[in-house]
Length: 200
Image 1: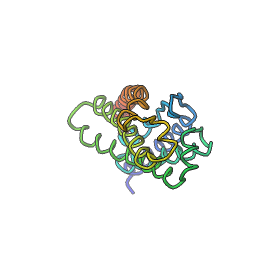
Image 2: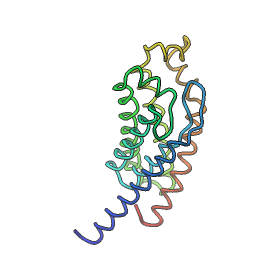
Image 3: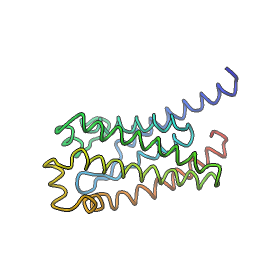
Image 4: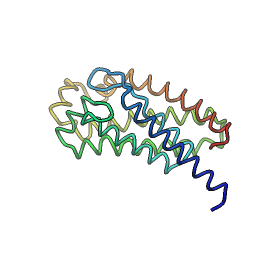
């Protein structure tokens, strides 16, 4: 193995470990909102992994995010009140809803960055990638929630007779806006710094 390849592998493994540790810390940092949801910034490490490591890194970090999200249903690595209810209804569907949606976030964020990084400056391409990671996280989490659990008494109670779109907007309106703005700003700054340091 060439020295350059060894260095690249070491940098990627180190970055992956640091981002995983950050995800664990962020698992405990949630801002509760109505309907059992919360504002979270866990998609930022996923976006950074997608930028710095590529498609595989985005998928793996998305998987770590999804696993942490699932563990929170049991009160591990933080706690999710909604998750605790959903895992009681169906652990398998809850795992699909929390894990698969987050892997998709990582994959699509990597594809967004791949499509943009040669067409615009580092900050802008990383900023859009961070924004898209937060957007995809909200989109997949809420759509899979409605698809997999929409007919349950619990979700029907939260919907309170509203249509699906009205329920999603009411549930994640502020969450989604805050998450997208913060993810865009932080990912843009970190990604640009990594690029300037020639780590990506």
